[in-house]
Length: 225
Image (cartoon, rainbow, N blue to C red):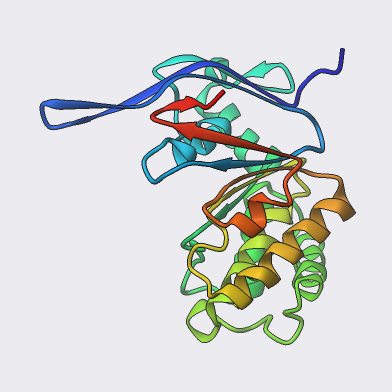
């Protein structure tokens, strides 16, 4: 039997809002195999982003276990978890989350420098990635000088700079117009094929979900059967 890349079991996660408790995930089980492209769908508040954050080690479940390559994230200390996020996972967010004071090259280099790779090696990787995403002429432009689509291309390059095996994308086309969103979809799928990566995307974009190997729908904190 093939060992899954991601195994989430009986995941519960809630948040306290004043005196009220909001249960976002209520016993989710999810398996994702190596190289698979899974789209998470569901209405706003269904738990898509929360599940992505738990898989990526950005948050902890209240109950349940998340394993990546059979290693439980819940058993990792803060330093080990930070290394996992930096080296094993590439994150792409709807709001880009680029550093406004850094140019495109510096933004892409940041995870590599955090991993203490040599600046020469990381810069070469960043330049190659920016060329691959169509921004060879934007290396020294800061986010404020780039369009939304260009900023998302920088974010994709940044997610790839440490060559992770897993990419987690949260509404990667959500802040883009339809034409630019289609370009980003095409780019993500091409790079995924080229690198053989596992891709898990939370999206409302039917075009993106329609190209996934599998669509998982969340309803009221549970995976719809």
